[in-house]
Length: 247
Image 1 (tube, rainbow, N blue to C red):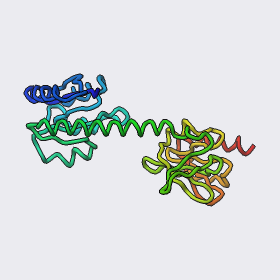
Image 2 (spheres, helix red, strand yellow):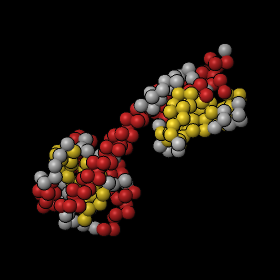
Image 3 (cartoon, rainbow, N blue to C red):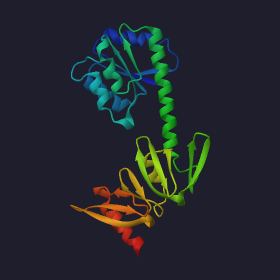
Image 4 (tube, rainbow, N blue to C red):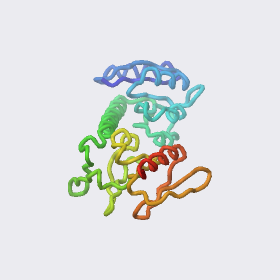
């Protein structure tokens, strides 16, 4: 069952959407809102799967509402508007679809199915993220063009973020793997790799030199010459960890 929030400042538009949705299976309207402020409040309170969102509204536009939603709590968005000119802006905030009023039933059903597919894909990606590192406690199975290759944890010198992926750097090559840094931090053994930056982990045994950059900042030079910056909020922990390692 997909839970929907309807947002429009025109009562007639809300009524029309509600009537059309009675013909769509496996959907439930859990709330309505009449302006941008109410929309943001209802999203936070109801946590719908999908918001059918008008663009031109009092207090805050639909585009502003969508742009202001926290990524981790963001529902699917389908804009419903009388104006074509906002289409490019709508997809800038990653809308699932863009419907023009008066809304046709076939387009509404299509938009909901598209949102449903996107929701399923996001859920699958989240499960994959949660499982990062779980498929092999001593390494990673990394997808390559011909299948999969195993990268033992003991061979990874350092890891860096690359958008929705990470790069696992070994002495001989680098591997791209779908995971997030936060997921890796929860899964990686602290004795093996230490987080030194929002976008980097380093194996302490591979640190050859610590360079002081001034203002309390440092960077790490690894055995292969790679220089990895240490984030300001990680400096103290990294310094302590390296001291423990050196003992």
